[in-house]
Length: 392
Image (cartoon, rainbow, N blue to C red; front, top):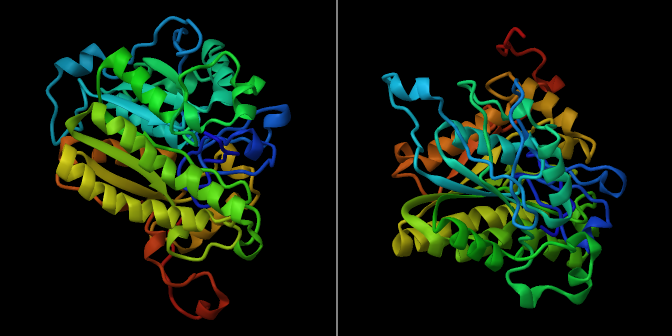
């Protein structure tokens, strides 16, 4: 979605992000949840990381190109026949639309896998200029290993939709974008059109995930950020969620769940996370509370956001200091371990399930507890204190 993406840095951005319109893409700025590509795409990065194993069969569909449809088989037959103990997350019969998946290396992909593992059917929305590369990678089996689910079955995608969440409807699209060769061959990719396409193809959805963000001037300090760059960050990273809900809520079944991705920079100072991105995340969290009330009262839809810690994704690496942020978290968080994308995906699956039926309007922290810390315990100031450390 009009974005220069960089998803994984949920420390520097929270949610996978779909690249911005060409104007922003040309800036070469990284933003959450986007995707890295070659040549002119080397700054695009997606944040969908999960490890897996095993090849799977090919074949997938996009709204712009005819391919064999991929049906998500999340649970193997053997697992379905075995008695389940405890409180299982069961999303069988549910359908999820995840906006912001452009590769297999970030939170958006991880969320898709966790939802699929729980039984949900998966639809994804991919930034139009990244669509061909994503579909080609699927066809060539580039993502085969990372599509393997915990039970050994394969995550498949029922349909891939082109989507640029920076544009609400066709009237919002500038002429230079309409004639841009990166959008050639794709249609129905504004938010309104994507929602209508999903309605025509599937009728309704139960789960909506916003894994998008973009800040064309993210590398600039706030004091040096232009008005255009600041507003672009809010448009792609915050208002895009309002727009998604506005257009998808009418086709969401009552009792459904919507989830976005945020980052601790919304409430704390994170030097280097500039360009108005911290403001965009703060707006996203505020909007989550208001949307929870409005969507809950009118449509019985729950709205929550996950504040994820740093992830070593290709997108996050694009801004340069993700490794330092991961090291900082390892030293200072209550849980001294590296965060995995799967942990964020599993939290999303829980929030989308009946087990979270009374949770809405919440910011759920999935960062090994780093958000709770008031100081960095690795500071020389604390060298004489006996602070417990995990043995790695």
